[in-house]
Image (cartoon, rainbow over all chains, first blue to last red):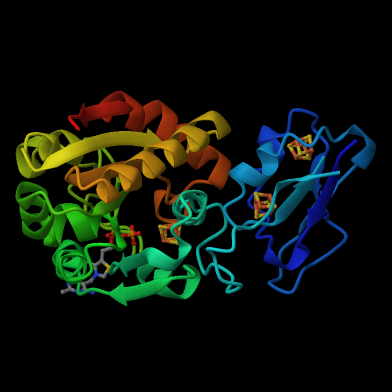
Amino acid sequence: MAKLTINEDACKGCSLCIQVCPKHILELNREKLNAKGYHPIGIINMDECIGCASCARMCPDVVFTVER
Amino acid sequence: MAVVFEKTKMLTDVPFHYCPGCTHGIAHRLVAEAVEELGMQDKAIGIAPVGCAVFAYNYFNCDMMEAAHGRAPAVATGIKRVHPDKLVFSYQGDGDLASIGTAEIVHAAARGEKVTTIFINNAIYGMTGGQMAPTSLEGQVTTTSPYGRKREHCGLPIRMSELIATLDGACYVERVSLHDVPNIIKAKNAIKKAMKYQMEGKGFTFIEVLSTCPTNWGKTPVEALKWLKENMIPYYPLGVVKEEV
Ligand SMILES: Cc1ncc(C[n+]2csc(CCOP(=O)(O)OP(=O)(O)O)c2C)c(N)n1
Ligand code: SF4
Ligand code: SF4
Ligand code: SF4
């Protein structure tokens, strides 16, 4: 079991995290704009997250907190 | 559940001003995590460059000094000589370090100053609008090389790590890259090792970090990582260039 916390307003929608997630469960939320005006990252299925923190290590804007 | 990743306390709450997907943010975090993991939060002093990272002093949660363009190694020298017990690092881009500041970096290394330089090589001048840097690749199109960098005109890109490694005062020189997670982990280990050697008084330490500038390369952040991997790494090989400690 793992838990991902997303600081949505820090996200710049660069997609770097999306391509390193081994579970392919990250996606930009096209329905939303954050305070900076970007579509922020969202998690499609938290149950599948393995807490590997690859997304957090790749993110240039330190958007994620990962618990496992 | 235990926290496996959270923002290091060595970074302030100020959000980075960098473009989306710019690897300056990753490099900042690695430097900050390295300081924290070494338990040196209260002893670190950083020198910010001129370039996109000019506001680095807002982001690192330690004493910071802003240097004139390219002069960070000289400022680092002064600070370290007055405060030999402090962990002193400079953070510099390739325009800053390999062009206007070449004299300062070469002589700081030659003198064996006990500081750590983090050298961000993104093969371009980011802040000023994508001009050619001494590190831009042959054939690379920039705003000042619209037909691509030509060897006859500009020579070939300078491999700063190899150059610095020739100087006896430099004890540890490694080139790392931020294009994927395993390399990001290696990059942090290299930065930590450099800081450790600095504190052991071994000599000058230099970590070259291959980075991206998606905005001025005219690429998406994901394409930029791929371009780095396919074009920069063949010319700028990764790994330890020198470790004589
Ligand atoms: C004395 C001086 N000369 C020139 C400049 C203009 N200038 C500002 S940043 C920069 C180069 C930045 O490139 P780099 O060091 O590669 O950093 P990046 O922005 O790519 O991170 C230049 C030439 C300046 N600020 N001061
Ligand atoms: S922690 Fe790993 S599995 Fe979970 S979202 Fe991030 S990259 Fe994907
Ligand atoms: S890497 Fe960070 S900034 Fe980029 S899309 Fe993912 S969460 Fe947002
Ligand atoms: S101009 Fe380039 S180096 Fe500067 S913040 Fe933007 S992407 Fe990064």
